[in-house]
Amino acid sequence: MELGKRADIKVGFRCNNNCRFCVQADKKNWGDKATEQIKKDLDESRKNGASGVVFTGGEPAIRDDIFELVSYARDLGFKTIQVQTNGRRFYYPDFCRKIVNAGMNEFGPAIHGPNAEIHDYLTRSKGSFEQTVQGIRNIKFFGIPILTNTVVTKPNYKHLPSIARLLVNLGVEQFQFAFVHPLGNAKKNFDNIVPRISEAVPYIHKGLQIGIDAGVKVMAEAMPYCMMRGYDKYVSEQYIPETEIRDAGYIIYDYTEKRKSEGKAKFAQCRNCRYDKICEGPWREYPEKMGNKEFKPVPVR
Image (cartoon, rainbow, N blue to C red; front, side, top):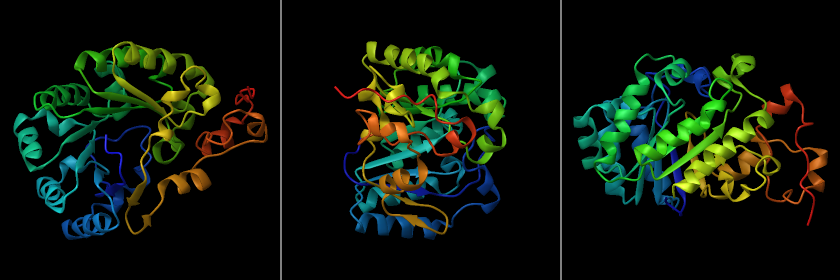
């Protein structure tokens, strides 16, 4: 994974899935950025010292100009070029060949269930599981690192160990479990989509352990340290590189600072925790609805 500064380029918000937990759902009618605007974003991020880029959305792979944008990033000298995707277009071998030839050298697909029943229920797109899994197999052929993301939700959290086994069998280099951020569709569907973090914890730990035992790099995002006892070195936030986010109409130059100051929440009891200085806490929308009693400080050694 790219260790230098990273640019997160939001290419727009159209998508061929309609996930029940989608954070960006409220922006869907904003459409996509123009090609020239994205090229300008890439130019500016490169000048600002970014050596890696992640194309995100929406769904970057449904853009007609995605090959042009990836090759433009390569020509600018970005060392790591990742496409963060639902993986569905990668079902087609010709698409995979073209995007790899254009310069994509890191693949970031999202998989949210161990089978079609759960994954397709969450994506609200019949056949999406089959397409995403085949997309992972197709990219595996090119020998490019595959870094998957699984959003932890009420319908899938008990299946995280099975998802981990699937990902190990598919031969991914890294997988991450990201606790659902209650915005967009996740906020609208809160009661059906957002589990109690403490109830999901045993399954998150078991899933991580399956990856650890198989020698796969694993992480968990938006999981406070008090929920990660014994797995504290797998908290994603400690590995997120310096990132600038180029969204629609605004730029976040320091994502870490923005996440800590506005995105996450801490509580009075956190001051007594050994991890207080490094823990960011949960997404702030979670305790607004669920309270904060389940977050118990880890005693100082």
